[in-house]
Each structure stands twice: as structure tokens, then as C-alpha cells.
Image (cartoon, rainbow, N blue to C red; front, side):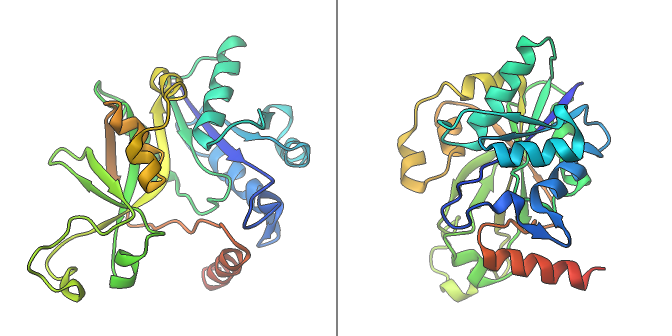
Length: 254
């Protein structure tokens, strides 16, 4: 089973312009992500997909011409950027069974997490795979910045929401974590290649527009999402404050 990792990396972030090139522990964020992805077992190729010449040149200086690809500035999501990379590689005669999307601001993603996602595709029936991690605090549960997920008995997602789900009727909110497991979505995805090609052609869905969650577009169109557990809650870097937190984490774990 051939696996491709695509790392979408935009320069023009509203909250943190130039984020992929920001330094973390003496190395750029995007370099950290690419080096980690490229060294994972079971991965045949890792490509940074960008819309900016500065990021393209930086990554190619680190990993060579095959390490990065310039993609359209019109893409609205990292999924669409992954789809373009897959399509262009297919046209060049490179074919992959599974595509993993690791965002360019996720330098702490672990090899075991990616291996768990890839493993979901060894049998039939999985369209998409992603991760969840336990929620430990009430603040974490109530924050709309933390996307919650509930699953069926076979580990397939039933719904994602920015609200706490499930709602515990007749239980005071400050006791919702007592005796009940809640889970936060970890936004790393893997796709069966032919499914990714179809997802990139879908129109936005009502639920997606309500919650601002792209995965609800896929579920609204009948695609299944396998969810695997991880104890490692990745530190995503969206703002300069997140970068400072990541630097502090690195200092504590030297």
C-alpha cells in the first residue's frame, strides 16, 4: 500500500502571516513537519504543498526539488491542496493508495499517529480516517476552539461539533466530565486516494457552513470517517502565542 503525505503550507495566514517559515527550536515550523513526515516508516513520499515561492524555495533547499510543490492560490482548504498534489502526481505516473494530510503548522505530530491512520485502510470500507484524544478539563470541553467528536460502536464518527457533545440532560454542566468520556478531534486526516479525488468536487454543505467544519461536508454526502484514539494532543500553531507555547514545550522536553 503506497502512502503519500501532503503538508499544506500557506504564507498568508490572517492570524500569523509567514507562519510556516517562523522558527521553532532553531528550525522553521514547516521544515520540522516535512523532516518528521519524510522519515516515517510506511510513507513513500512527503510533499509540502504551498502557494508561495518563499516557502517553496525554503523547503526545496532542505529536501530537494521533490520535497515541495507550488499549488493554486484559489484553494479554500488544505484538502483541496492535497487533491491537486495527488492529481498532478497521478499525471506524472506516480500512484498512491492513501494520502495523509498533515497541516504545515503541526510540528509535533507523531509517527504512531500516522501509522494508526494508515492501518485503517488495510481492509475495505474506510473512506477517511482521523484521530481523537480525551478531554481532561471543563474549559477544554466548553471551548468552541476545540472540536468535539462522537463515534458509533465500531469507531466511526457520528458527528463533529464545536459544542460539547453529547449533551448530558439532567446533569449540571460542571459535572459533565464525571463518569463520561468526551473527545477532542485531532485534525490530521488520511484519505483513500479515489475518495480524496471525489471530496474535492463536493459543494459546501449546510452543516459544514453552520459549524465551519469541512468534515461535515464529507459526512453529509455519505462518506464514513474512521476515528482512532491517541493520548498525544498535538500542539497546533495558529498564532505567535501558540509558537511561544511550543517553544516552552520544547524547552521542557529537551
